Length: 467
Image 1: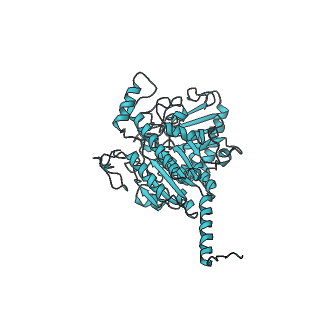
Image 2 (image 1 turned 45 degrees about the vertical axis):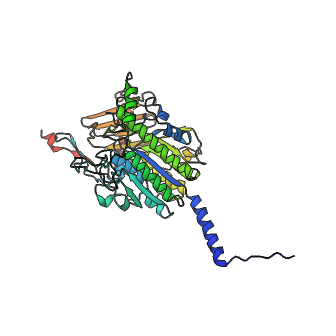
Image 3 (image 1 turned 90 degrees about the vertical axis):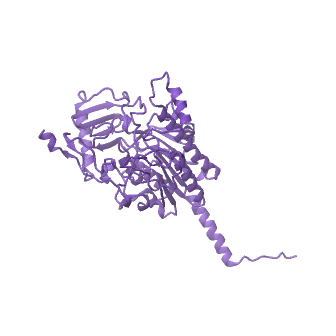
């Protein structure tokens, strides 16, 4: 007996082949979730040695991927390092070395020795940001949370390649963490690009809700989520129950100093856990890369960065060394760590190679050899140019790390410091007077790097000369 053959119409064959091809293409481009925590210190997580803050979800993330012990921000303050993350370029190359301030320009003392560079307070629209790099691959993209790399609407996320912008605008801190996110501050009365503003909701919870919604809405296609929490930046505000927990914990110890900050850290960690759980529940874990980092060191007024010296706003380790974790299922071995020197400039080229995109001309390098344990970056040197009077330090200067030696040059007052980080992580012993030859070599190397960019430089303050 001859079996009947059911012929499939040709249009259905084309449809099935197209659908299969799209599925394969979708699988070839992993989802990317970049979680940026504002002002999170290098020592603020359990996986980095904290015994004060409870961060079980991020600690679990570190066990599922690779933890970086020598990761650095490109700047000791937020705007420039965020610009480096999004573009793969150093702040010097972008002409964006100082943060966007509420007064509209860079702060400096009238009688200070230098005037900070009259550089940009935005990223040029001609620069290619991560979502623009991914557009040709069919990625949906969202910026949820803090932006602070554009001083007006023209430079907000949807003008820089993002499909969606939720709560991103020019300011770097919210007027308040409590809905409806309004205050009497004339310079920052309300969070823009966020509605509705339900009374009583907590901002970190709300942004996480928006992130989970975006993931759900785009789970059938590759997506890039830039979840840029305002937490744990000031103002200090957190749910009462968590604050009470840390008030009790802070008694009798002298390592940490602020119960509200502790509550903010734990709430942030809980919300990171919610995002990770949603990815798992939707069946996306095996095809989703998760990167978690900070934009600069911890704010010294509210957290203790020891053994690192100082905190946000300083060129000492406490201001520029940051936590960074990468989870890449099937590619990065779990529970691994590395002491390779990395910087926020490296984020874009790394994501580019992960998804098969072109990074273009950038300053950072791909971390793939390290992540896949197939090689080293062979990087020996990192540089920082920060000629600004940060609100925290008011110490304009520059720094260069080469191997284990780190030189810091201060502009006001002029001075040089040299440290051996392999023996002195806390930067307590200045070796500059004992190693003058090395000092001169590092100074020359830094200036060679700096002038290779056609930089916008600081200038001498005539008011200082004439005082």
